[in-house]
Length: 184
Length: 165
Image 1 (cartoon, rainbow over the protein chains, first blue to last red):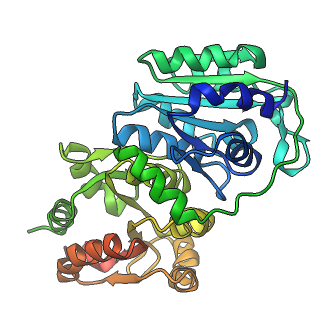
Image 2: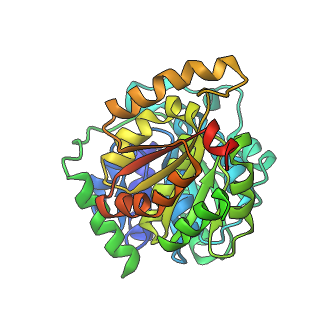
């Protein structure tokens, strides 16, 4: 399974949840599969999806799911100690770890080599870290949404992409409708 | 009132409820007050662009944010400012310790100080320079300006401001 297969299976689980999606293909794929006002698409700023998700979860009570990538988390590795030390029961960080920079031509990341993001997250103080296969991801996310613990899920999947259009929506419109969903 | 108290009351007057910080010696006093303030959620960040992500999320979650950092941070936050804070029209007061101005003991700090205002100007970020302690009396209006315009603003607080406070 590749990332887009996982996202396709996640659509019914995530459709009514607040979701923050990483720049590039994760945002574009979610936008194509199931565009919702409850999705905040990052159109730029690689690395910050997990930080935006944490800030959002800390500021209000609804569940927040940030969908990030291994390359993006590696770019902002300082996010893991911040998550680990600021307990947040309503925050789920899903790292789709395909071991490559998918949006830029599938160059290998260090998590596709020797680095274990799950072990890094645990060492950073994150209490509930689950590493699972692509096939187990929907169940892991469903359980985390039903539960009451901040959770990091690292979904190990194959590298590969499908053709998707870029997002041509206005960023301010994306933000405004997302904020209206947060307040709804 | 000490400048740290003026800063705290400006944050309160503008309902700032989420503050992220990367420390600087000059900011130690105000960071301590923020940590102890029950109306403000203080989330220290490891790098300032990470902090801008936290602030963007907190804003969309309904809490007015601010970031407290040193001017060296301008070097690592240009992309986050352009493609997140400015692109999505997110207000963000940046309370900045302006190192490398007169009175600075560390020569290397001057190297970023000479670029600080030029970079902020290039980014079209409204910038206010606090040099005398009474300059802090404008802070509340500056914060209000940031939230009204949904733009980042920079408040540069130099060594003389802190020394004479």
